[in-house]
Length: 417
Ligand code: ADP
Ligand code: MG
Image (tube, rainbow, N blue to C red; front, side, top):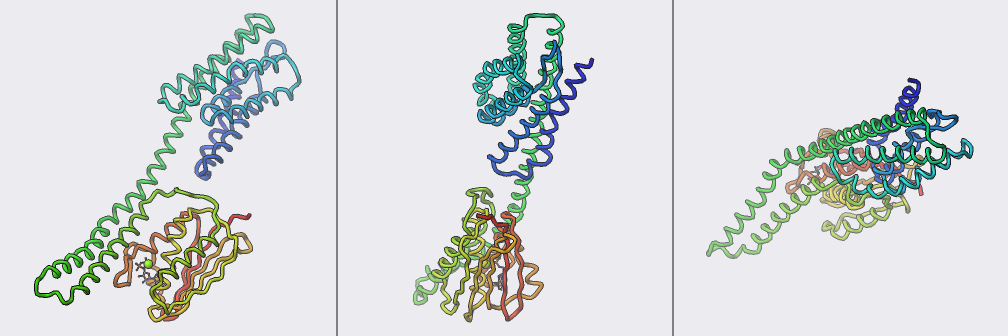
């Protein structure tokens, strides 16, 4: 009975890292490489825990369920993790002293690893039932292989076979249980991601009604002008009608453009970027397209401010904010743009204008969909900008006074170089 108790203790120790991973790490770590690294380390901890409390039998031989973390580590994470975990097993086994046990360990690993590597890709592609068959099959093979190698070196005896038999049954049962468990947890996690996504689509679909309405206005106005152009006895204002039609179509285009930005997949080219470069590029872009020649730009951009973001999206949000600043100054003024790394490592951007400003109520409504005070505004720019800034873990604050101007302060977590 004490053997079973020992195996149960090992089982408990083995599953602690799996649960810790799914409870504490999965939600926080986003990158594939980091996930693999964390997971490999945790399976390694499982192995060390199992090997530290083995079942001792046949005068000093050790049995444990270290194979299970090795198996799952390799099947789910790939060959590299498998090699690392195997090396860990051998090194840790060596630390208990050189004995026949080390030889058995190495021989069994040499036989089993190529087999696991061979089925690894297949394992990830098949359905759950097949995964269970593959995993338990490999466990069975490992235990039989261990028994044969052990018998080959130490001879054959009934009491030893009994312990090994219990080990075999236990290993297969735990493998089955863990395969089902990991599958269930992955399924729940996947479901959660899908719910998050569907929330996003819900917002988008709610907006679609308003969007359709917003887009219809400019189209109807254009249609009206085109109809007028068709009148035979009204041609002297032709040019003006064409100009107005184009303006309206441009507006429709802008609304569509802003709207599409909402539905874009969120993780396109995420990486470490130099905000200073992006900001300079955006500033020069807005200066080139700035039709209001009375607006001047003042930039104070510190070189090499690094953060993690998708550059295209960041530019899009900055462009929206800069465009608003320019548009708020119909009679001209200065837009000041700055970017610095703060003492505590954050990246701080400010955009300040001397425009018409907003009252507190207007500031509060900023970022709501289709909120616009402009005759030809879309009212989507700030909403999209807020969304993008938050997705990069940034904070945005606004200070504004009517008739004086507005200042946007944006802070992102920085990356030290
Ligand atoms: P749009 O520019 O198409 O109107 P936005 O979402 O970009 O839509 O902006 C929403 C509203 O917020 C604007 O119509 C404007 O009234 C106000 N706003 C935004 N930025 C500024 C600013 N820098 N100064 C004054 N008002 C602003
Ligand atoms: Mg705008």
